[in-house]
Image (cartoon, rainbow, N blue to C red; front, side):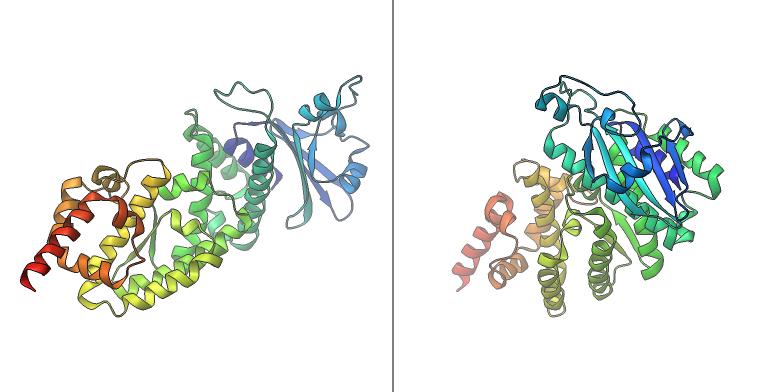
Length: 357
């Protein structure tokens, strides 16, 4: 367990320099695993620190793993030196885990120290990753076979992950994707439907700010809703987009209402779905600061489509698009106001209707 946790953090975070994973058992026995192997010289002050220390950031000399004390520092210098994140009381099967992770800026950054908001994000992410990893190990041994069958396969899996993460900048992205796929595998088996991840969904994970321990439950709730829509529309798979990372506290009512509406759309259902698809792509493009044009919308559809195919589809379904826009004036706000191709067909259809009136 400790080795898997340490190697997972080391593989996922190039910013992690030193890692101490401490396991404390019911009989107070302590084992320490680091990113360089087992740590046998257990500090005498470690049990007391585990009991009294608070979750937060420490300098190495403030932890039990250093006997030196720095003298004559200013308050600012002392704060900047606090680059060891201490997380306590993480429940595992037969012990409590405590983590000490030293984190420093990575890559092309010229900064020598992490900013306070970066520290907070690491604190949330690492705790969420480890908590979810332990939950998967404890609750689903079948899924665990995908990442480890005993210590030997776990080590091979970690080595394979490290080889995959050799390119600069891909470490964090691939580790998150791997982590998410464990959850997706469980949901696919449970609900008997293919679940695919769009590239935008994976990109959206980089900015995911909710607690990671809630992610599996949130995704399952989204999948349950999408499953109902898929059955209505005769589809055999679900595609996850950044919208599925949103909290269902604000999303459920809207999606449920939409699913009820789609039961009554009849001949307009396919056009409604097409507009939903273009609106979702436009929202992603807008979040990236891109202009709302056919090229950018097409690139962010899954699978991607050409500008010409978008224009052709809209022209062929101009009457239905006009009806839907009239019926649902609050829907598709981005393409309605910013996509010229949509504005053009609405204008032409409006003129056509006036002429035959």
